[in-house]
Length: 166
Image 1 (tube, rainbow, N blue to C red):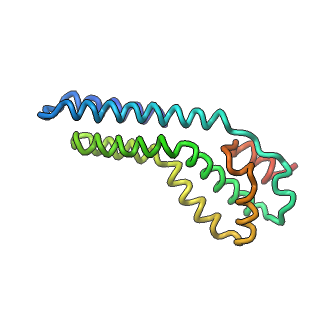
Image 2: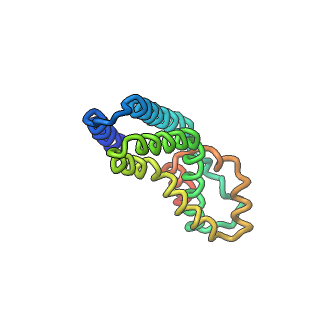
Image 3: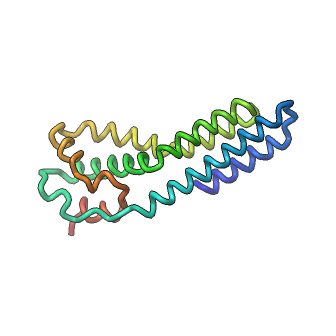
């Protein structure tokens, strides 16, 4: 994803360089803020990655929970933790992207494509939350109380332990 985003950013920079807009100062400032927001978002996501842990194998032992319910819960809490971890930086990115698109309309398509790539975690969260909300309300409430599910975790490794126990 970072390679694609880098390519899109390069395209945006070329469009801005070729722009004959009268108000170059506001475009340059918007570009600077956009670039800073991309760097900050990347930095925040990297920090989130370093925090990820493998969930304990006995996490669901006190629950009557099916394999499919385990998958649903893990996917939802994984997406939720990742989205929460970079939420502030994502908001800054979205504001900077909208601002750059507004002052340099020739970048709008590239900005839209970059934004779509960046919000994939949010899109995944919407889908997994929809699935999670279909679980029994009592089970959902019990799962929401588990502190281990509130922090970022390694989905694949945790899934192997919790969904496909040996």
